[in-house]
Length: 235
Length: 256
Image (cartoon, rainbow over all chains, first blue to last red; front, side, top):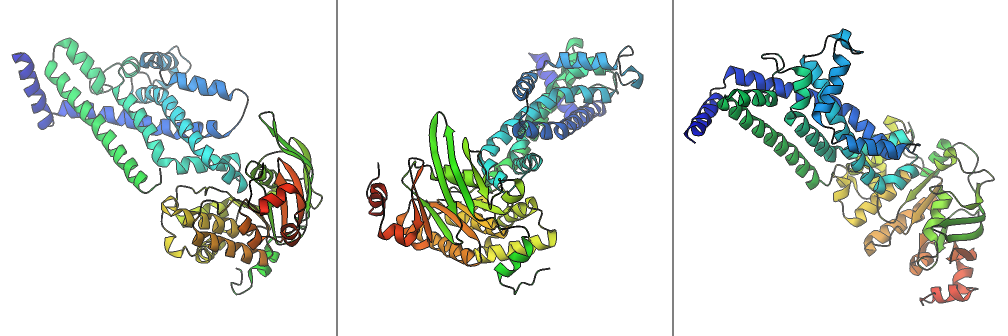
């Protein structure tokens, strides 16, 4: 117990003094996950919106697969990206394995299904309300999709939030494709796993607290925006 | 730019090129959904300008008939002809519709009209002019920047009508536009419809409010169980209803 309290104190000191090795890990984690979420949203929004609007054979199957992929185990996503990027793989020439870029790609793979599936759901709800009006105005499917994404913008923040939560918290994918290399690809989650197994509880605890605080801050910020939008009846 | 001093109907004629839309002919029109024949062999010809009121008891198929005419749903049987032409996108773009429940986007009042004008490919410069005029005529200038969905029910429906009229349609459909509105908003909407009709817009409005039909209609289509029971001028219809159902309806009785 005394050890634990001592570790807790050390952890707090690391945070309060902005310990450089701690900051380095936190910054890299945020960079990787934020970039992954931004890129995944750029793909997931139009994909989800189009799935809500367009009617084509196999639409049900695509929707089902997308929903299933929301639960894709991170280690599997990591394995897939690893196989693609390894020297023997089709994209091996790019030499991206064990770089932050590889981690971004792996996390995108995890986040796209979440953003796309939630976007589709939101857009379908909106479409129920707007469909006849938009068709009466003469909107094409493309224009309807754009309208839904624009009008659902505040609700779509929750999709982004869910995606970010998944990206920042996962450990399996970044571990496999990043390799947890000190100063290069070490993120909060991989560092926590490593430091805990090494018995360096203080650093692990400090990282854990920062991770929690980050998730909490991002959550609160997005929820505040959404509440503001609801008050204006935009959501 | 358009000359804002010119009366609206003169401006419209210069904008909407193309052959006339009317007469609108419904030939053996039927619509089935869930094994039920909601519209059952409707034949009608609407050719006079002015306001045509589609009346009938609840469940008569009035809203469905309106959606068929506007092309929002396809008939199971029969066909619709606009001056002899089958419905197409070009013809649909010369029409507009106002729904019973106002459908407004999550944008400002002005933004809602802007969005509709953009969908109809109205020039950017002209959009702002039309938005200003539409809001002014609807008495909503001071609401321009407000989120449309925070407006009152009456204001929302006035905005929907303003948006539809800003498209300068040749035919305007309305589905029970005042069913859940206060008398003041109802009056405003009826006045705007009469003005629009004077500007040469053909108006086809569904209502089950006999008073409203008396105030607005030049001619009446009386629908019952998905069939046209009567179609004639408002005067004929109200003075000498031919059918038992119409007599009961006009007298305010229950129609089974």
